[in-house]
Length: 343
Image 1 (tube, rainbow, N blue to C red):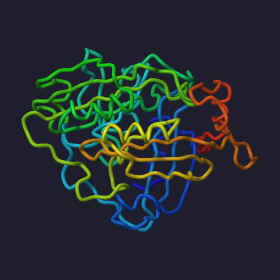
Image 2: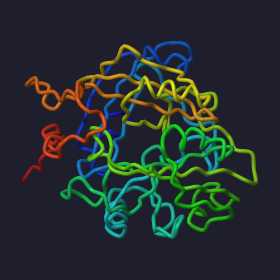
Image 3: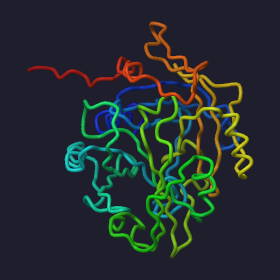
Image 4: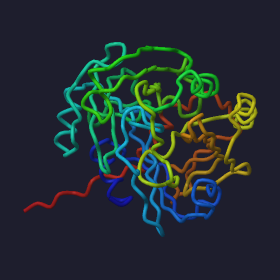
């Protein structure tokens, strides 16, 4: 499946129909993770205006991406699944089934007894649908945007130095060991695991925070086997969930804090970047198992670039959320499905 086909699926299945940017060029700064050679690529970052984080869809243009060397199992190292929020699990399940995604089990109680279900999308990507109560918009399908992810780690306590101490996911919602019924339908889900569900203590800071909403990270550690690295012997940009991205501010301060915790930045655009209609500064840091975390400090977002309408985020209180009305103007960029022909 190419970028346009994946974007089409993301629009129709997940409601990710507003492209924040589209860009084509060379990933000059990522050679550390692309075999020492800048790779040509196309990318689109899309969001669902009901609320939640977005998905960046990424495709090589002069290289065939490699699949994982093995089918990833729960507890393997890397991003295992993405959490998508809904206001009705029953409606969401019917919606997903109607769009030909394959359900992985049924609605079941997850950590802390919260019901959820899994499904696999294109390329075998695993998604988890969970009910949430924080919404930015009410119109649209039953699904919202991204509200977290599940990450496989080799040592949860060591990994929390990054996810809790640097990224702020300090609140422990649940911490449990054992064999979990809700994961049994998934590859490796019948093994003995430790699962820790984390949430940020602050839920309303940053220019885009009203749109992005709250999020949770679930760390999973295999206790009865040696886990494998999902991106072993592959490039950033190969098939799978290649990184977890955070909207950030004060990146220079984050750089110092990250280094002090033993996680120095591995990539830093420093003087900024330009991707289509968006500009800013980005950086990468690795968790203890090499999973990539991207930190993006946005400077400017295109609303109607053809008319010269941009949202400039510099020179304002970076912790203060943008007004809802201003964020809702992003709907002007919505990509609607083609009109049906009447016969």
